[in-house]
Image (cartoon, rainbow, N blue to C red; front, side):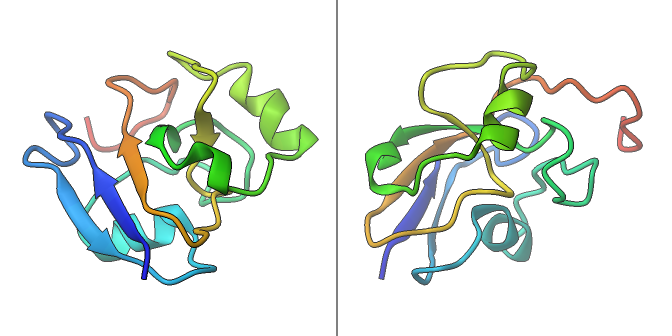
Length: 112
């Protein structure tokens, strides 16, 4: 069973977390179900960049991103080569080490 290892984030996951996931789970669904409140302004419809994460380990084990995700990622704050939208990441058979960026580009955030 793969694990999702979230690195500490001051607001979203202060102590970090290690969560068991199933192959085929969507990363953001697992995070939200376990109390890690990743922003998702478009309700996980792949229409914004608020759920942007960086995969510090395990990136190469994932299915490649599609063109619409890539187009959105170009607009994400702090884009890195291992960036993905967590609403589009389907868990494979390897552990993932996940960093939630410090900022998002969300002009209508209701939680601040």
